[in-house]
Image (tube, rainbow, N blue to C red; front, side, top):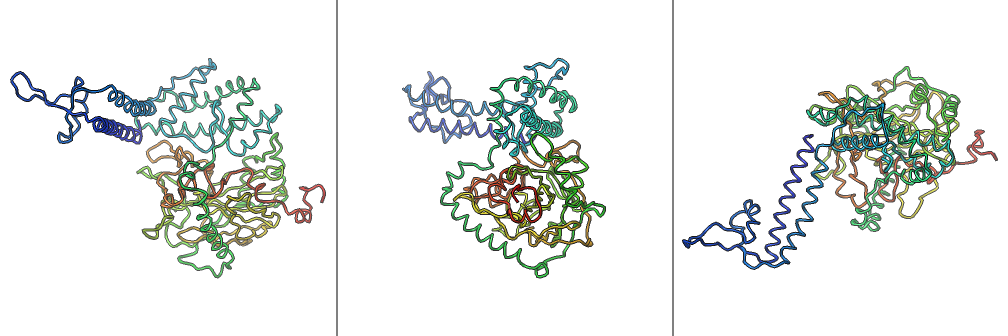
Length: 593
């Protein structure tokens, strides 16, 4: 059992005991039950004994003598029922918790040559039990109830009503199954170290387990999708829960508290727009300006090459652009920005995430990294390709006792949304907590306004400068807060530190100093230890752990309303094409130009 689980189980057992004892005391007060000393034949006082055949002795043993009340003869059936009801509420909770944290059944080397339906269902059940017991669940995608070999993200969930014919359905399920295999590979890699010295609870090595995942998933898929009723059930179940907790909004009087928050958001938008309108030369510098550059050998594609890659990679039944590994690398090289940072302390230096010996994540500033990943958004009947670049800082330093925003680790995600013509149509950015979502649309897009009344307006400080061939975006970052301060373009290669690329998915399984792997993110998608004081202020907005760093798929980006960084309809909800601009460029997006 892992130290965390062992400590948590012990604490819960103590709390159950204290609750039972409190229940008994309440029972005594309610019915005024007292203990009377009994006398033996010699007339001397004997030990205090409860009337009900020593029923209370185990509990009284842990109760101070001065708190013990004397029992009184003549107990009613009502008192017995009261005690029974009290214990029936508390004890099942302890039993349930014990079952939840008891050692799960080991995976007994399934014979992959004789896999059957029942054996496969048991295999996935046992594997899930092991993963949950060890606390290594990967939360990037949502599991689909009733289909343990599939997982879903928000993009694929948006296809539920469209996958009617056989070709689209199979292509859709292929992607759902790939997401599950990818997540399980991370979970299995993280599984063994989570058990500490109890490695014997896993009797198969990782390769055998993943081989069984593939074979059992294929077998169960063939069985399940052979029935139309199961297909309908899959479409209904392939939903990703929102990153909002409704009960908090109810308890926090959301209709009222949201109006207060909106006033603060309005002031933030005004201040941010003012800063981004300031010429870069007039921005104050607290420390030293340090520039982080991509590798000098990084190739920059022209727009036609980008458009060709997008068009070729979108040739699939779902129309989702999925560039091959080499093309993906070329795209990331083309649009990676230059980071210009006001460095006042080591907390302002970009670095790479690593696990320390004390099991806490830290930033190695000697190895600056930009973590990259692909995402997609749907817009006017098309699926657009998005390039994501994430950088990490050691912390946002706390500036004082009342600073609610500071804490361990900080980060920025810069995203480039590419149009079908190969030109960026939108740049946007968030901090790794999902906060401060800024949009920088090109002149090709027009903001439609809020989608409904209780909807936080978008923060659009300015339009993005039009990025031409052989140009790179330069992002100016403030010290301490790591706020974006300026956007500009350059063809020159300034002096600075080289920053290397790294796959974002490595954060889901980082190597440990002592061997093995562990995800940066918890089973809830939150990075432990990065909590912020603002959570005590903004909890009525329903966002779990406001201010904490979180995993992809868990970035709630609005306090008022509901909005996620990976919402597939984000552009359709808030933007529309400026038709005249696209017609002027000869775009084929509109047939009636």
